Length: 335
Ligand code: TYM
Image (tube, rainbow, N blue to C red; front, side, top):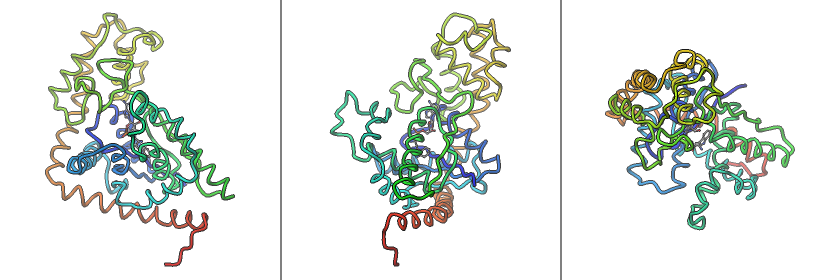
């Protein structure tokens, strides 16, 4: 039976990258009729230091972002990870299935620790992908919509499922598919087309935040780095122009047009013409989300209620899977 799971860390604000790579596609999948679970992975967030009050606020803000973008608690199960303890329990079992060498090969781990003092990284940061595998597999999820940067972690999830099934001679965990689709699976920084758009970039002008108002969104697009050439007829013409390519990808993803159709409309025109159109489109799509997030944040108790109700529904799926897993592994279950 198909089932969709995905998660986002409440470790800071949401960016246009999170929106186009993840949330917007969560909404599309929710409306496709498949069962969908979307999580705020607070246990992952604490793999690096989080101020407790800030973590609570960011988790609610992420929930507000999900809701404002169109996720509906009547259609999708929305919850924060720590309220369903089966994630952490299955994560421990997977820590004993996964190998150190697998974790050492994770590019995100390497990026976060090379040149820095890896001795000072938390043990949780190293084991992060194993907990992520548990998030997915505790629901027997078959499809995981993510941006390009999470592909390796979903592949590791497949390796963990396969090794568990092999070691215990069972056909228990499904081999999950990453779903990396759409025109903007890797949104780049607005200041540097070789870097991913990220909430941790020191320059606020490098990203569009989902909480930015209309003026901010428009001004960041106006200031985005580009070049002096007009837009080409085909996408190959953008191969050596990462900043230009990124803006075309963003336009396509926000408008729902194909990249070719975007170029069909703008080929031969320069950024003086393209940027105002992109700014209008971005403001029209994103500013209402920012306004709605602000409105939802005025009632944190209602957000907490939605997360609690979602966690109840999530736990009802996860707990039997955990119980079966522990049984397979050989744990006595007598209470
Ligand atoms: P996180 O919180 O870094 O990002 C959340 C989602 O946003 C996508 N994303 C992007 N997509 C396109 N362009 C970008 N610039 C960009 N930046 C972020 C990410 O690919 C991701 O889909 N490990 C995950 C959270 C997680 C998870 C899971 C995901 C934990 N458990 C289980 C799926 C399933 C993470 O840190 O994402």
